[in-house]
Length: 422
Image 1 (spheres, helix red, strand yellow):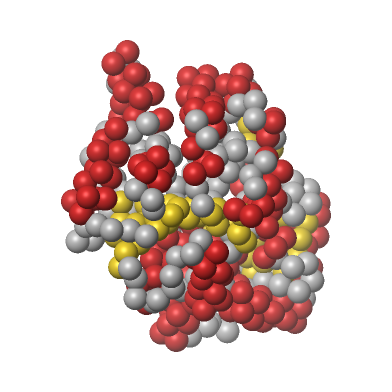
Image 2 (image 1 turned 45 degrees about the horizontal axis):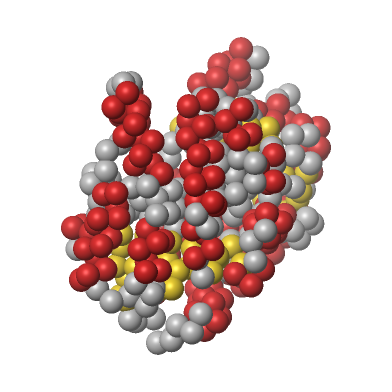
């Protein structure tokens, strides 16, 4: 049986790619042939199906060459991509698919492909990696703060508030995209929406999506990847409570909504060493902020490759996820758990579904510097508690996010759609 796997990117682009790659391997292990459909990019992971990928122009390049023609091209291709539709027509003519599994497809691929898939009678599963379908900005954030104005279906708020890149043009385009696909009832043609978190599922349900099309499947993770790393790189017990090399870790994008400044303020003056691994549009400003205050217990590492992140995580005392937006399912938390690391997380979005307060980590009120500082000091000064939470976290992650458990959830969805399991 052939599965059409669709994503705007076929290279490591974040948590969405991590899951895509994991579930692709899972399908293949179960005997399915996974045929990808994406866009051409020099960073793409090698595949024999490169000819399936659509040639699209980079919107960032077009936007950098501002003129009327380029502007119209961005508007046209970011809402309905004719190149993607034409390429998909070729793929459907060459292969018989019983179902398609969609990931992030807005802009370069566009939801217009749903029309063509349904015309061919192909069942559609869509993993919801973000809130784009019900929030034009995609993260329920407007100018750095949580906003739910578009939950009413009045997407013009995105434009009037300049939610997208603080740009009226970009925000208007995002609002137009949302109106277009809801008015054409495109999303109603999707057979099943796979939700990584209960929080996300409830948001889509509250918006009006039918409960019978929403399935809590969580994500799966390639646990062997970390287990093999641990086997090859034994945990360093030398970084203990008395070591001057001991540190707390943050891994992720360095942006306002990620709560990194709150974390910086929380450790300022504590003497607790914090390592920040990641890049983003707030990185330079936060480096300047730390230097200006002469804070000497914070180290910015910038973007780190996976092996480096694994090394940092396995040797950290614990990890902090201080997000101030509706995180869906942060893989940094899952990876930390698999390294038996306790996580201090904010009570936002799907984080409390992972960080069970007092069992796999500690929760705090998002944005509350004092509360976060107290949680950090508690774990820093109580090594026994930290190890206990880490042990629980590892057990929890292995039980919930293993491939077998995820496959059972996918099979439930496939059976409900009358798609035969192999």
